[in-house]
Length: 465
Ligand code: BGC
Image (cartoon, rainbow, N blue to C red; front, top):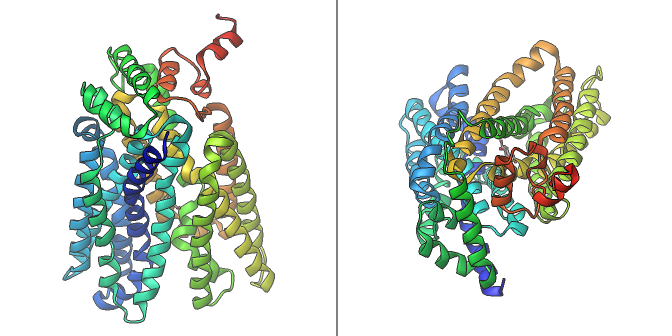
């Protein structure tokens, strides 16, 4: 790839990754804004919970119902529509006269986040050359972490004037950038090939691939498309069902290991460990920064060390830090050492998530499903992800109440352990493997763990050839 092609590819990827900024910003901004919204609208406990969780509900619906549309309208159009929904949802939330419209605005925003959460990584995966796919898809996760951090900073900046409407309104800026940027971006060449627009796909590929790879890639995509012309209905094909089940469990694993107990409740946890309110808010931004830094660390490693290795390292680290958090909260009295252990464990936990489940879930989901139903399958997996996000967010405090803080963290540690076994048995290593090869392996009946293996090596190993 020459420098011009590289620049074009990175430019396209960065614009598409703006969807991740919005995902992170709009889920994070409410944590600070809610303090002042509460004051203005005198919300009850239930109303506050509704304002906060309405985004998650919207995302669950948005992700679940737009998959077919993405396979029908195309990746580019769906992201453009999403940008428009982001703008509408933000304006309704920021200029709301009461809490009802705020909840409506947040549900609309949630729908946009839900669609963006699967459409952006999918678009990035389909544009990327195979040896850079992990990196480029993970730009989306980097953008999510930057969006979360940005939301903390914006909340902090406007907190002095108690300007919660400005906090929410800030989200219009990345939405407009995404809208304008996407208008100029090309459609995914794989989607165009799926729909038979070969010349258009060729023209796009020429801008982002070395000349010798273009025809080869077109041929491979068309071959897989034609080979899978038979019934690929997601609910009747056993190969599809298998890979869909694995994708859904992986997507759920990202949430049920407790990431958002930290992202949404960090100040609460720090306060429980004995920090005063302002130090709790300060150390929370430390968590946000760690998330960004370790996602940056992960980016180049995903295509080098591979998806599985990073998942193992990350999940083991997450499990150990959750055990240590559980241990810290076993102490009878909050002390300086409890505060330190809590801070160190939470930072380690976030770092381990950022190099593993954070980016890699999106990477693997964008790789394992066949082209024809990639949008639908990925949207279903992400919908399960949002459902679990909501479940964890809604049950965390009740768990603490019912079984105690220590046991709650031990529970997430146990789920992380189960996750390690799941990854070992079911998740393929897909680094440096073309999407078409993964699809071929799937339909030739390979075990899910072997989807990323070159066909010959694997068949040789089995003595088939
Ligand atoms: C998850 C979000 C989480 C974020 C934190 C994403 O991969 O889907 O639920 O808040 O990472 O960085």
